[in-house]
View (cartoon, rainbow over the protein chains, first blue to last red):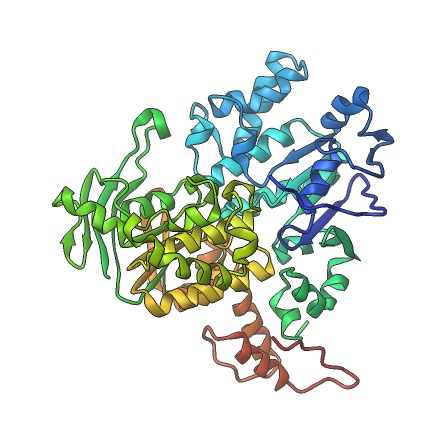
Length: 234
Length: 290
């Protein structure tokens, strides 16, 4: 897949906060996300996770443990033959004791309403259920940074509310930082900070209500803008 | 085309999707020039409903009627029925089969008609904001989510279907992509008799749906005019949906003294209503014309 290029002089994301990232399709949001856990290495410049450089092979595994990514398209990240084993997969790799794995999986299946799907093959789930499973599996590993790349697109109203509540509580509950890539202005408002990508660079960075005041530039950049701002009612 | 489902039941084979049935006694009519919106929880049967309407899945019981005739009655007619239906899946890359976008667009066209249709393919790509020079020879698997969605929809429109079924068409699209999609759906609606759109995006449905159904656990829980449901805060809340943004804005305008009517309308009408509001002292208007 041809990925858009990014040129970001400096972007710092701290723990225990939610940062929303918006931008047109192809503006470099997902490329930046893949750089954050070392899946892509920058041609120039550095990506540091708690001071660890993604360029250094010895630290890459540690970086991937710290930065959990949920992709736009959940098909890409399933490896197991049942919902239950998909949830267990990451914890087993981390060497978590079996009894603890089972307890944590049970809890996660309740939180994400996946209990009835325990034995199903992930590929057979509906679009929204796949997204729920992908988010549940990554959140179970409690990464220090959670990168969510347009993960609520196929979720129904109720699931979106529930998943959003879980995501919003992450900073307070685990102290992790959340990077929420989204095309939905309402989701951006849930974050204290909104970063807008345009053609690989950062065009805006600030509180969502301040950033959305630039409605006409954002519309030109292909960024969805709340209706109120579009008609000048905000 | 009028498509009608009468008491349709469907269950997937148990090892594929567990034991619960996907559709339970679904009856509905999508009439000529109607745009039916379908919402509801995941796993509720929405995508299955589209596959049944496209006759990709045969109901275990009940009927699928096209203009009053059972589409399954004569298996020899199934292929021609399906050619008249455009279906776009939730994950567009699942429906790509060809090496280039150009071939993909013409895939559903009979080989003898392809040369004649090439011009339409170019035109459609342009309407969707994808320049033919840049895209015709690209692999559909190299496209971004938004681009592949537009190519998938364009490839179903090229056959000028009588019935267009869209599964979450707005998901993953940016502001421009959304505008292009909306424009394309408007073009399609001029030609097309009937459309069914599955979407959780009520802002998107508010622009098109004439009627909305809520499908949960395989059965229909609500079926009524879009305007009734989209203004019904309590009923939407029960399914975790907020009212669409346009409804919130209309309510805000009315609360600020506008006499805008409580019904779905265009952005132009909203803008006019917003401009008609009295300005508070020292306030500057920052409205942006679209």
